[in-house]
Image (cartoon, rainbow, N blue to C red; front, side, top):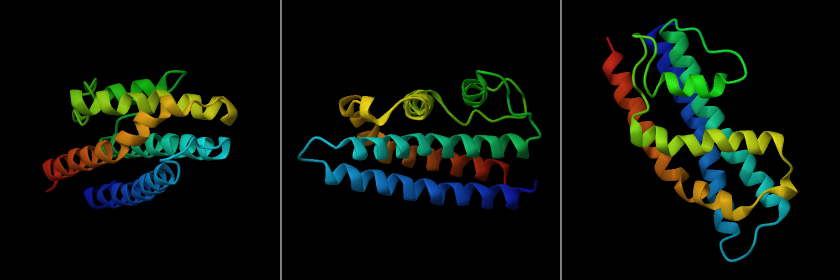
Length: 154
């Protein structure tokens, strides 16, 4: 994979993440003065999980660019994440510094809840913080990725 291909693939993911964040913020506005319905909580959970899936997609693409095998097994999501917090492989950047890894970790953990639970079991109070923080977390992620891409540019 070339730098240009990586840059394009990250741009495509960021565009999808931008749409996901926008939809989530729109939903947040819709329910600002009332308790969300089960359908709205389920939609919010899906958007929160999709947000982290997009982050993972970017990490997988960066792994491929650096010719680093994507972890496998039951803990591959955590292992992939941790490789970018404190790289195990010398070829990987520390893309997720301490504040960024702390900000993203709840989204990673929540994706499991969203995919393996039921909408009627979701608690809005537990999701609301992630919804409220998503725009800031996304801005930080874009900044980290921009710095990373600039550091590997020819």
